[in-house]
Amino acid sequence: MFDVIGRNFVFLMGGLLTTFELAILALAGGIGLGMLVGLARLSKNPWIYYPITAYVNLLRNIPLILVIFWFYFVMPIITGDAMAPFPAAVIAFVIFEATYFGEIFRAGYQTISKDLTAAAFSTGMTYSQTARYILIPIAFKRMAPSLITQSIVTFQDTSLAFVIGLTELVRRSSIVDNMEVRSIELYGFAAFVYFIVCYTGSQISLYYENKAREVNLI
Amino acid sequence: MNFAYDFDWSVLWRDPYGVMLIKGLGMTIFLGISAWIIAMAVGIAVGTLRITKYRLLRMIGTAYVEVFRNIPLLVQMFFWFYAGPMLFGETLSRQINRLDGLAIYVSIIGLGLYTASRIAEHLRAGFASISKDQYHAVLSTGMTQVQMYRYVIIPYALRLTIPPLTTEFLTVFKNTSIVMTIGVAELTFQSYQIDAETFHGLEATTGAMFIYLLLGMTVVKFMDLVERKYKIQGLMGR
Image (tube, rainbow over all chains, first blue to last red; front, side, top):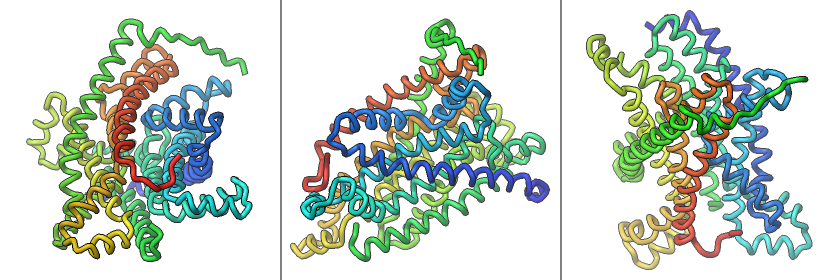
């Protein structure tokens, strides 16, 4: 019954590799940009606050599939050349996921008592020093569970690059399914693979959540 | 580098494309609300299972959340749509596949069950984010366990959970876009269809973005009011 998986194993795993490559680039870009977006969302400077807030609200209200399509359509106009699905997907994911990570960081910064930032300023720290040494590290720790959860979501989101023809795991499963019509085995297998990766991730998230609670951080 | 692109924004209102977008929006709202109803009912039930003191119920709740949360919605949809009918055996599966609007039923159920796992998880996270000191403080006033949950912990957790539930309510409308892959004619499907017919996908998807934006803004404005009303004092704010 599951011989269809065995016969196409290398092909399917090649898709999983593409999934991982896309996820790693999307996470590195999304988290890095997200830290700054989170700070900008708490900025008292209107020239920073309003444009970033508009960007965050715009992207968070739009389905990722549509964002992927949009970048896929707009990139050729900017670069003047047809664009491969992979780089188009990476750009769409970084710009999209940064808004979600940004909101997690903002929530993290907001759990920090005003007394603590006031104390930091009173020692003579500048705003950027306070952000770098106080806000970001504490937010990172407190938000570790949410950050890992969002990373898992990002990993799952990469399956949506399916729609622009990126041959990742789901696209490859559907290619094999079109030839062999073994939907239960193929989509069951894809589901199983995603489950293993994401469940491992969610257990790590749980570990950090419990650890944080032990030392009474949350 | 001589890529010339002639913008043609009339694909947003020209016959028949304008009507296609409107119909797509209607389908998106219908799918979103239907799925949300299923999701809230199942989500609150599963979330409650997860904090009961009965081990078996907790395990069922946990298993539900882990399975639905750790598999991409796209894969779930493909599984329900392509493999789902096959699970009922050959004769029955043929009848199911002949059903009118099968993809729409699959979409609503699939999206509802998926969103339920996320709602259940947010409720649990709300409980988890409350400091132990607060539990101790409440108990030291002489309240019983039940009173503690009823009057302090649950209201506090719900207030903490408003932002993620807002996100979830928005997400359910956005996630409806995934069912374009099983051929349901919602908003994203329609904008992609316009691209297939006119090669003006950029205008069509930009138009669809603004329609989603208006839909989302409506939800955010509403939830902002809710959040402000139930804001917890003394935490860092803007």
